[in-house]
Each structure stands twice: as C-alpha cells, then as structure tokens.
Image (tube, rainbow, N blue to C red; front, top):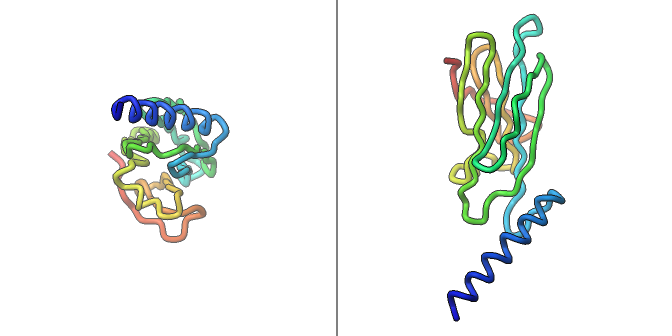
Length: 139
C-alpha cells in the first residue's frame, strides 16, 4: 500500500510539473533563467552557441555582437537538472555547464548570466549583471 501511495505521489508530481512547464510556472520547484550574451567585438565573427539539457535541445544560435538569448525552466524536484552550452567564436571554443542543480546557489537571484568576452567566459548570478567574474578561458 505504501508503494502504491508513493507511486501515485510521484506520478502526480510529474503530471503537475509537466502542466506547469507549459505555462512557465513551477510547482514544488523553483524557476530559473539562463542568459547568454555576446560581448565580443563588433568586427569579429559571431558567437555560435549551442545549448541543451538531457531532455531539451535549445538548438544552435548565431549571436552577433550585443545580441543575447535566454530561457527559463523549472528545476527538477529530484535536483538533477543540468544545462550545458558549447560556445564557438571563430577558431576558439568552450563547452561548459551553464546550470546544475548541485550549484544552483551560484545563481542566487534564480538567474544565471553568461557573457562571451574576448578574454573568456564571464559569469554573474544576477541579471542585469553586477559583478562579472571570468570563469573560463577560450580553448
């Protein structure tokens, strides 16, 4: 009986989470937003960004200097959400995690801001950014 009750609860949570994600409302979890910004020089090649999770491929975006894109999602109630991106800029590239449930505290305002810069990849846990920190060098 306990197993049936637990199974019912898990199925119910999954159902409500699926319904909420269609309306961009999170039930029993928190909504996060990831921002990707191209702060590369105007006369340089565009930033090519491909971002995805295990369940959602957000596609490849070509961002000219000054352009950005963002997406929002509900963190998993079992805390296993992971989104990653691969950035390419001319001959340079960098792949990295833009959000993981394990490090969600880094996005302390429920926002993860990533910026491609000539020196590397910068991060701030708020939007708009207040104190960008270089996290990765270009490969």
